[in-house]
Image (cartoon, rainbow, N blue to C red; front, side, top):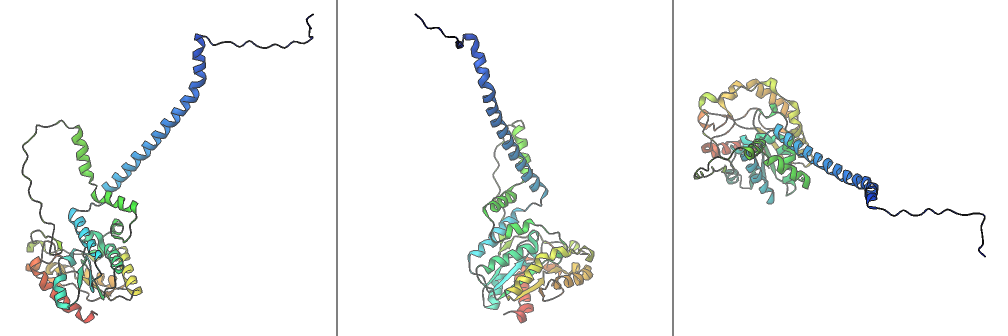
Length: 337
């Protein structure tokens, strides 16, 4: 006889999915899957936005920054290659007024010891000279350090990139940044982008490329045509002096004192007509330079006769470079070690 129970449990009968219930099952999975894909998409959009923002920042920085000309870059590479050799007995640091005035080869003949002219250009300013002195000290100790900058250098604005481009030990990221900013030409980029959308022009017969002009000769940038006398008079105003520009010159003076170096400062040569127009400025500038702690050998530059002026008022004509080197050797000889 079957047993009976006072209580009974109800077990729901499982419902088998039909063809119409597949959408319901999919709807349970879809929201989770969609969230994953939305997350991936959001991450990709964020990464793309950061990349575009970074690229735009680099472009804007370079567009607003002063461009470094090809000769300036070539000269920097030429001069930094000299650090592969031991430091010379007499080291010349400065800008184009030095590079066009001093022949290291002639100086060696006169002094009987090694000499190296590490002149950069005015765009690198005192920061370039400071860093080049630091780099030279990594290879040895010079007996003499001659610093020669153009007369109007204390009026020029400080360009911080000069320090980054010339300092002794840039890291990998800085080297990449330097390469980008040195070689990036914003105008060329704009031209290239426009060319992508410009209608193609009929192909023209190729013209024979002209040979590129020589950039360096006699250890410095090749000059253009000499200035005519009518353009050799430039008045430098004492009111344009910018004491902040001597920040790196003060660091040079401090380094010379700390390392017990024989550091001597000279103004670069200047056209006679500009000397005559800038007497008040030269007096004030010399006082400012002396206040940095550097040894100023003479408070007036060598004033060049018209026929000795090169392509700028502070450039010696190449045919007069050896003679001017001899002049500076006689001026500096009492102070040399």
